[in-house]
Length: 314
Image (cartoon, rainbow, N blue to C red; front, side):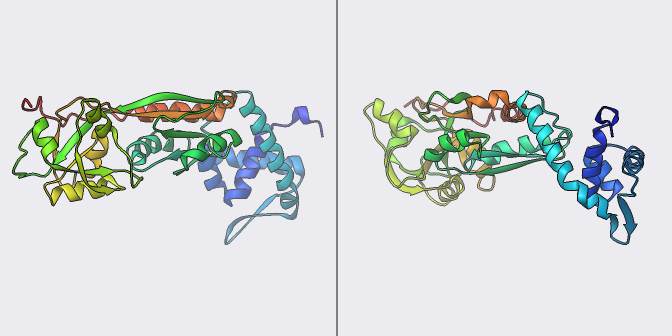
């Protein structure tokens, strides 16, 4: 058999029918019409002089010849796909691949819906696996390829790990509705006089607001430390404590509590997020495609204008 006379796309159809168990699901998987898949199967049957698949009550069952072929076909297709990826080519519409992303709570609540929305229709066979990786392991995971990208705060990284700023989230102050000392705005004197909630995975240490206050020679009293923004929003709604957190996180978790969202009465740096990748990813068409979708999804996270025009003077 002369390979130059064989349409290699037939083997893609063969693998899809074998995996999905029928012409209809194979057509859906490949974004082809049923007639196109049926025609390709007819050509495969002529090529191998074998029916390859026979119908029964369970669908299309592979013949002995088909089962003998599938291993070599899959190896060949995977090898070709790897070659194309290394050359920078990536066809998201037909590719079958899982991209792994290290991302912590709660930014996944912001980013993932936008990312899935962009990928779902254009890349039906692309899967996304997310999880929170210990920050000390992100470097090695990116280098080894077990992680395709990471979104996190600024961290020290070696030269072979790229990082770029992708999202800046302003800080806001939360106070419960009906707070006796806070109505529609807060001045610096009231902010310092009240007690606060600090959201952190650490039991000790300072946050962005604390560092900004210390530059002014000031301090606040942390009454409660918790690990989740949702918990902080609930505590605020049931106490006179304040919480200072990124605006987008507050917009997600404060929905159920309707606490006041206020501008801080002092200058607080925004919470900055960075996209991390291994430098060699620039040679992988798939990883480049995934990075572009990530950047597009991050671009969808528009600023949310929930703040009053200005606060009372301190």
